[in-house]
Length: 486
Image (cartoon, rainbow, N blue to C red; front, top):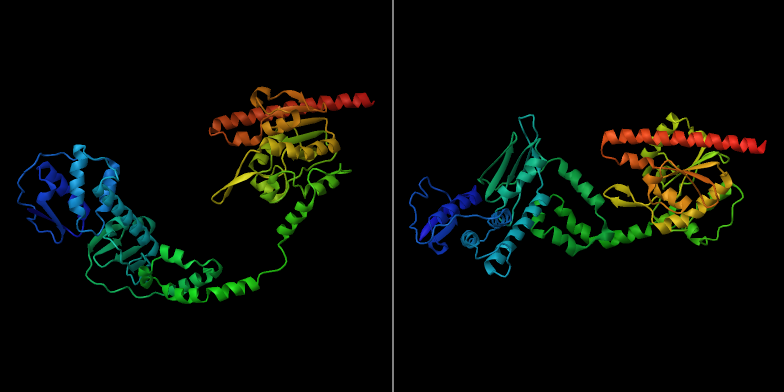
């Protein structure tokens, strides 16, 4: 039987080269024994006799990645098992991922265990700062992995801590990252690095964020097994934190404030108001006060506040957009976000002064979905638009503008009954249900969503032209009204 001795450092790469050489020589799996140890200079000088059909190894990337992960397992039979699988995969008698095959299932389970061990190493390595004569700060850590994963796991630390020198020692292999170069060697000393000054600070921080009311010991031990505790500086705090958790949670409950937060009280007041029974307001201030407790659709539950219209209550021109955005929801004012900045700029260029315009939205609450830390705008549905139409109808009745500019499909739907074919209808005047003239254009946010800067510029010019046209129409309507009154 031919014996292959793989080096401790570079084990996977050495196995890969040997597997290709043995397969090319037609050596069957049962004729080879594998072990890991010190490689000699003439280790593979004697070629094993070819007793089978020479094979060219040709594997998919997924298979190579899975096999190389499984080769980082501690199982001493992993090399023989992987070589046998390689031959079967290459000759087409086995498909990668076929869990019905015992050897394949074993390899895939071992690859999964290795990935889990790598994840634990990334999570539980604790660096301690050590003295350095170099301008770069230096750190050292001791870790005891379940499998020989050092070469597979440490590039993560090189990418994350590339501005410092560090050493991660394990019982078998030590990884060194010095001056930007990652290297490996067999471990000579099992002495742990000394504690540094930051560990007391870390313990204080860990104790302060430990929430006794949410303690789940089994879940914590599942994510942070006890075998890792003796290398973690915070581990000596954990038994006492667990032991005193119940008393601390009871103390937190007793200290909880009894008065509800202002937002909860506001929501309670709003929920107490009957829906869709608002009386017609006498003034705009009456309408604004009523709107603060609006519960006509579910959007009031997630939004920060209602964003009501603003501007002269006898304005000749009314602007109606879609709904508030993130900034409007926080400030309580319409058109103060990026789309509002586009509108203000182009309106001034078109000769329209914001101070003389009543500006509002078809929907008064911000509808959004959360992605990470951002709140992403979502278009209101037909029911939400219809529910909020009550407020816009009364705003129009109180302001009685001579012209409304509907910006976007939602505004068109609310005012004319249809939001379809917006670009085809753009620049035209239609009638609202009460006969009030409605000039149709795009919403400024449409311009901001265009990916091409040149197209954005062209659309801003077209939007400015729309506002200029609306201004001329408004001027004609005002002159006609003045002649009628005269």
